[in-house]
Amino acid sequence: MMSRGEILLPLACLILLGGVVLVFSRRDLRPETKLAAVVEPMIDHPGRSVAEFGARTVPPAVKSKPLAQPRFNATPKSVEVPEIASDAAQTSPSSWENPFSPELWHSTGWNFTSQSMRATGTEQSSATFHRPYHKLMFECDIIAAEAPGSMWELRLSTRNAQVVMSLILSDGQLSVVTIENGLAQVAVEKRLTAPLTSKAARQLRVVATGNRIVVSWDGKRFLATEQLAAQSGREIVWSIHTSGAAYEIPRLRVEGD
Image 1 (cartoon, rainbow, N blue to C red):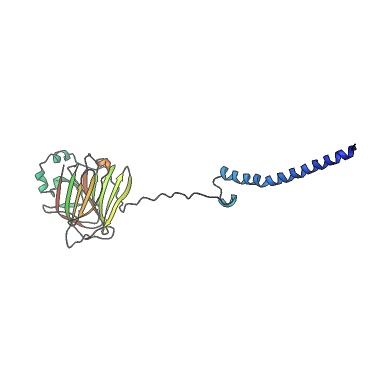
Image 2 (image 1 turned 90 degrees about the vertical axis):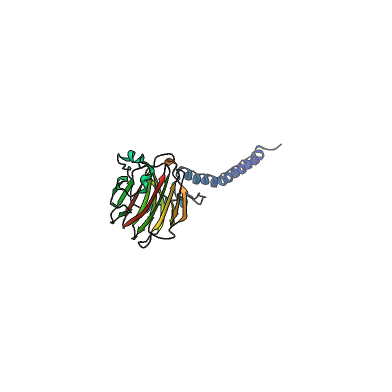
């Protein structure tokens, strides 16, 4: 029969061995505990840098492309259409055989003769045609001695000027600029095949259908773009604006309904 000491000695060895295994098991778990401590701050503090918490995959930030800025400073205001506009709208189409009649315009800085209209100075000039249109065909010849920064603009606007499409001739190129609820964007911009000059007239033709605007320059189709949907089916008032140089329009043709 085994003595009490002989029984307790193996039992003590087993207890001691179990303690050693438990110690090493806890040491193996320590890296996982540290890893959890590293991951948690990444979640709790997303603004911290990667260097603070170790390398991790960061999705690239999505950068929005800035809108193109219009190359003109004029801010359209409510379109000033005189009270006689309603009478002018009822005038027979034969009236447009003399489109340079001052009675058909509300203008500042323009001089009218029976043969032409001319903006003589470098100050800003504007001329608004009395009759509004839903659809418009505008054609004219332009003579100008352009200077850097000078501008000739055909503006198509709703009466409250909240929706505007402008065709701008400046620095040898044509830009179509849209303005809707105060937000201006360059819809399209293209260099002119034949720049404006004081030695010869250049022909500009603009057709606004309510859905599209088609532009011809110097007798050839030049560009086309969508017309703002908010202008479709609505009365459009058109006007001509200049600044920075003398411009002359020796021929003008207007049709539409």
